[in-house]
Amino acid sequence: MTAAAPTRPLARFAAGAIAAPQEIRDHLALHLLDTLACAAGGAGLEIARAARRHAQAMGGSGPAGLIGGGGTSPMMAAFANALAANALDFDDGFEHEGKGMGHPGATMAAAALAAASKRPVPGPEFLDALIAATEVNNRLILSLQPTPERFREVYGIGQHQAIGAAVAYGRLSGLDAAAMENAIGLAAMLVPVPSLHKYNWTARPIASFKDFVAPAAQAGVQAVELSLAGFTGAAEVLDGPQGFWRMVGSDRFEPALLTGGLGAQWYSGQGAFKTYPACRWIAPALEAAETVLAGTVPEEIGTLTIRSFADVAAKMGVCDPLNAIDAQFALPHLIACLAHGLPAGPAWMDDAALADPRLRATARKVVLETDAAADAAMTGRGRRPSATAELVLADGRRLSHHVPAPKGGALRPVSETEVLRKAAGLLDAAGLPEGVLEALQGLAQAGDVAAACAPLFADLS
Image 1: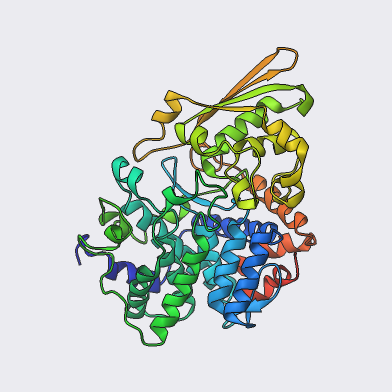
Image 2: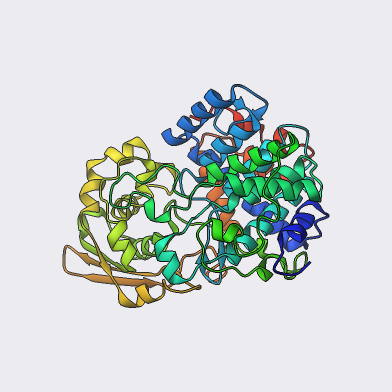
């Protein structure tokens, strides 16, 4: 099988034994904890409650637990739980050479958790499924990165994650290599249309699905169930000049990235953690703002100028977001949350924050400008966001700070302690007891993953 025909070897890998080194297993276990904590923290937002209502309306009551309360069918639980994990935009990403590409954890974990509702799944087997799914997912998005010219025309954030979700759910559903290839073909046919440039940037509020983690999780689970029911998917769907890469709008494809070093080189270890509940594009601006705001009170702020790449000023300048999803792409509002000392998490986008006139007044002191160097850093394969914050205090003092890239990835890693602290804060915000953090930390060794996650399925709204 040549590198130009990667579908079959990738399916064999996805269904076969996973011999990942311990550092990869530890890394994915930490990402699983982070994802589930983000889901618990996001479960109380209205968008997550609406997702649970929709899931039960479409899937009825069923065995698959809903994070935030209730149960439904595996397919609809995957949808709602992925949405909860991404509801705060605090969940993980895949970062390669400084460039962020999607939110795999929310989709993969939700699909795997849905499969764990069908039978008891021990932690090591669950983690193998996550590793296989994340490896396929990360290699796939890397292989189909478009040219800068095509990126400006069409791009999708989470569409490829449907295939990763099919791997996670399919592996735990017992698919062999041939059935896995068929499920991958079906998943590719169910993915949503790429739509980064149709997020409602100039027609707020931002589209509810934004990163498309929930439709991708649903599509992946549905693809496997369709395969089990006897449906036939697109054969060799990743291969050739009309393959999946072309289906999702790319203008180039590197098939060797899908299979080269498969089982020896682990792209699943390149996950990045988020340090702010916000679009990753504006994480450097938030960090820079937090640095210059340290030790000040909102009344002392004269102006706070953010200099970053052009899309920040063009798309992120909203002071009065209309809902929680809108808030994640509203830089002045988020900076106001920092200035007023609100803890990072649901407190930045709950109803109280969205209606707070003090936050709106502070947000209007924020000025967004385009910086040529930051703009240049956002071009090409290694694109990465950066920002500078300049604070002018009411008494005329000036403070400035530059952030060259977001924290949480290989360029600027965060410690396990920081991830655990974030998870503890989110679980506490959800009203969960301290013991839940310890249980989620031990999921990779649990006898039954779904049973260990039972506290998450209580009413968290």
